[in-house]
Amino acid sequence: MSKQKSSGLLPYPVIVAATHGDVDAINAVLKHYEGYIAALSTKRLYDENGQPHLCVDEGLRRRLETKLITKILTFNAA
Amino acid sequence: MKPYSHEEHKRHAFDSFCKKVLRNEARDYYDEMKRQRDREVSFSELSAQEMDMLFVMDEYPSEKFNFSVLGHAVAIGDELIAQAIAALPDEKRDIILLAYFLDMTDGEIGAMLNLVRSTVQYKRTSSLQELKKFMEGNANE
Figure (tube, rainbow over the protein chains, first blue to last red):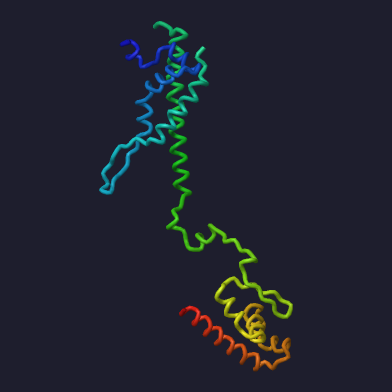
């Protein structure tokens, strides 16, 4: 496990299962990229005082998740 | 350095694939937002003329009030005006319709109705007074 964490990569069996549409495996993939998705969907918004706030754009976050799910299925893991 | 096994290679490929998918999708999203911002105009910024172009009102002949004068059909949309005109005597009504709805001059109307031009003018102005009285009376009710 510690070896996986250090490499930052998903285990090969999970990848194969996800590309075949296994729900648990796809969830594992989504979980794995959760942070990256959140980072991509974070926007800097300014309030009336000009103070910057970081907000996660929920619409974009869902959209990225959906896109990732549909694209996972096209990956050739063999 | 130990060459990657096939599985190891696939794991890296999958990782880069997923990141690329997410990155491109996020970029698409921001491009769409930008495109929308460039083209979007808020309603309050539209001029009155542009606002008027956003809708059409249906016009039905049955909702109009039809008069006929010397073979011409005249349709009037406003109910109050139609009532006022209907309340006029025949000759005066004809003169009003010819003058204001068919854009004829007093002389032309006189020629068609066998009247002198000044008579037409007199009847026309007095008809206008009658219309005014009728419509004001109606509005006061």
